[in-house]
Structures are given as C-alpha cells and as structure tokens.
Length: 286
Image (cartoon, rainbow, N blue to C red; front, side):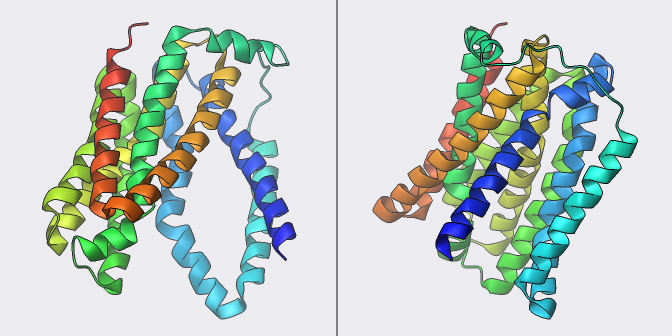
C-alpha cells in the first residue's frame, strides 16, 4: 500500500544520502591526495555501470520472475556488498567531531557555499531536462520507442566514459575539469533543444551530455575535497544534500516549464543553468 511504499522510499533515501555523504571521506583516506580524482573514479565506476546495466537487467528479470523477486535479489546484493566491504576495506579513523558543529563551521566557508550553489545550478539544470528526455526525444527529435532505448544506452555508455576521463583530469587540471564537464552538459542540452531535429543530432547531443554528467560527480567532489581537506565528512554530507535538493528543484522547474512553455524551453533553461554553474565554479577563488 501507499504508506508502506513511502516509508520504504524514505529509508532508501536515508541510506543513499548516507552512502554518498561518505563518498569523499573514504576514498580520500584510501589514496594519496594527488590521486583523489582517480580514487573517486573507481568508486563511481559502479554507478556508471549500473546506469548502463541495472535498469534493463531489472526490467528483464521482473518480466521473468516478477518485481518482488527483483527486489529480493537487490536486497541480497546489498548484503553481499556489506560483507565484501567488511572483509576488504581497512578501518579508518574519522577526524571530524561528531555533531552539527563541523557542518556549521564548513558552511561558514565562502568557497564551500558558492561551490555548493554552483554545483546546484549544474545538477538542477541537468534534471530540468533529463527528467523529461522521453517527451523531448519524441517532440524534438522525432524518435520512436526503439530509438529511445538506443538513446539511453548511448547516454549510459557515454557517462561511463566520462567518469573514466574525470579522475585523471581532475588530478592534473582540476579547474579545467570543473569547467569542461559541467559546461558539456549545458552545451549538449542547448544543442539538443535548438538543433536536435534528427535522430543523429539527438544521439550526438546525448552522447556529449552523458560524458559531461558522468564526469561531474568525480570532478566536483574532488574540487570540494581540495577546498576543505580537513572537514571531509562534513563536505561530503553537504554535497550529498545539495545534490538531492538540486535534483528535486530541477525536476520541478523543468516540469513547470514543460507544462507552460514546452519541453524545448525546459532544455534551454536547463542548459543555461548548467553553463552558468560551470562558470561560477571555475571562477571561485579559494
């Protein structure tokens, strides 16, 4: 029933938020500082592969065995992951003080606040368009259901490649990485909206889009960790929270634009937001 569904979603959200909140601190303690970007790339490879494989795999298994069986299998996979982590990962000591004090202290950093706002613009811009990619692909590019499936596969593969490129570039040229990849999202959205009137044009735009978004988490997390290296847990929590808020606000804003002005307007606004976020992020002086 609906209350049980909502409760499950809340628990899932808490778990996912907590997982990403330690996405900075743990890799930063397992690899040398100069290799943080590459360490985060390794962590994010799982997300990239899941983008490509997990949804079609879950859909196929659901058709064979039913959705409840798929949920049980997913829960079992989570248990296996916990066991593997307990065996493989070393114990690490947190340097942060427990409580809200470190969070408030981190929020007093002008660099972190502006960084979170810039990242929020990028993520909100992305989800203002990507949430509605199906009607956009149909209305702008004229794609049918089969072509849409190919489009999503292209996006997933491109996101995986973007993630692979993000870590090495972030380690060597961090400012270039935080400008290039968020800007790629915005440019791809604008290309999609303005000139994506053919299947080939849409697929090329989405490939660029996937590369940009696949790289953004690694690039921005590396940037945050370098900006505030002594409060990694707090930075991770704030970034995870800002990311989730930006997803919600971007999807809401995109929906309002789709209803009021059409899906093309949502893509244009989202693209401008992403490019603006990239410019702000690279302009912040630490």
